[in-house]
Image (cartoon, rainbow, N blue to C red):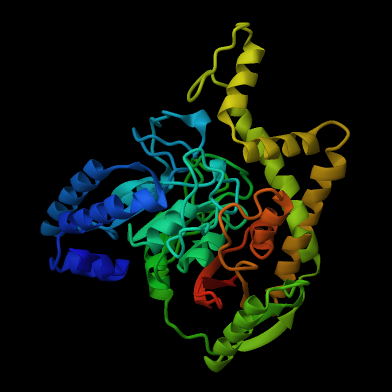
Length: 458
């Protein structure tokens, strides 16, 4: 049965349609893999094996009838930030303990309509706030490449699950790099589409002007197949793009001849790891040898991106997380005083973790009277300039190549005492998020210690 785990998603899809394998035996293979490895990796918060087998049986029936969907019988994992009808959705936070949504997110609904099989909900940094998957209320995730390594964050559970072959693909969300950085750390493909390409309906909100759903997969074709399914307009999301989504798999010609690829000088940051710089140069050489033209470009406001992001994102988080009051759903701590204000305070004190509290306080501060203009309003102006840099660059080039992350996966516990050092993990991914651009992380090589490194195409 372990042979089934070697299939790529495209191979599994084709084998299922050809009836060379059944959806049920494929689901059983992945359920067995999760039973063996998840106790070590902690990639999943909630497992749904009964649901998976039921989904698989329905998929086999539809395949027999010649009614197979785009992902019929394909076992997937779902980041526990997507609301799933009747199945616990926690955002990896105590404050949402026991919450079972009465509705399905747009993205997951698209997957189930396409015939996908649900294996479970994956672990993440609490409310997607983190770059290491160590802030989860359910414990940190282990990178399959090393028992002492983080998988990246915030979508670390999804990335680890795909890398360890516990699913064929998994959903993630990317606010400032939360798909791309874990994909780089775990040696897989991770795509953040254009803001608005995938509906945010039913995704637990972190920063609404930045959050975007995307996919993790083992290779680019698998990412294209799944991304096509989850893309599309949704009237319930006012930021959802009305533009029809193309078939991304059909776009995979493999031909980059004649494309102009930009190399931004500002991404060669001071103190850049020599291995990362060498990998970037190797990627440039690969593109040149494939017939692409490499063009030096400038993105002058890049140096302000991290500071801008860490004003805007916490401000939006402060607003979004105000809904967790202990009244309507999730955790409720009843105070001895019986006062409503104390119920709010004690519920939030017990329910939110340290990093979430830090970002709420930062966000509340920058939105407060007397500081709004100096911080939040100014950050929005700088965000416009960062986006304008990219608009200017794309008048000259078709795509931009950069490293995905400034290092390979680091050790669990490293950087946790220094929030700024942790935030610097997003230095290459945050600018594209602020500009709303699509970007993909591709596994491109190994470090001297044998750990995966990724390159980002914007």
